Amino acid sequence: MKLYYAPNTCSLSPHIVLRELGLPFELVKIDNKTKKTEDGRDFLAINPKGYVAALELTEGQILTEGPVIVQYLAELKPECGLMPTAGSWERLRLQEWLNFITSEIHAGSAPLFNTTLPEEARSAICEKLFRRFDFLQQVLSGSDYLAGNTFSVADAYLFTVLRWCRFFAIDLNRWPALSAYMVRIESRPAVQAALLAEATL
Image (cartoon, rainbow, N blue to C red; front, side, top):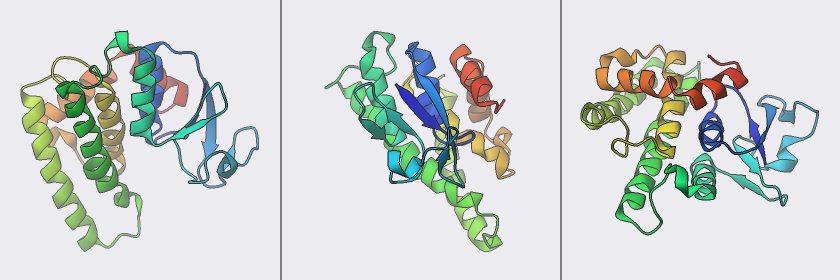
């Protein structure tokens, strides 16, 4: 398998999951500005959407969208427990978390990368985002991970998008349980290995 990635993007999530599962894979870096791979290929020919992550399977198919990729990967080694059993209530709850992270945290914070955003718009975005952080603070005050006491693909995803807060001058120490959660996830060997490979420590 090949994982097409760019540093400091949401592709870190499937990268972490690949390492947690111990699956063999190749990393292929993308220049987000030129849409070229590090070996000069046109990334748009690989993923016409133009963004990472994209996972090239051994049979040549390309899978896109991070939350789908991590579920696919977890299914390859269900014994690792990164996703609950298909058809279970716990599986639905985990998919609920993935959807929440996608729509409320990932999409909710992405506009803040726009440095020309008017202050009024930035404040409105942060106000909504902080309400989501308040909710996460409540959840993580009573649980080590989103799905209880077990690390899951949802944790890889949430960790990835919350790391962007440092680019937005948002101090997660305002939410102690959330801040402690980030330290807990970052200390995992697979997470450290992924960050080191992407040189984003």
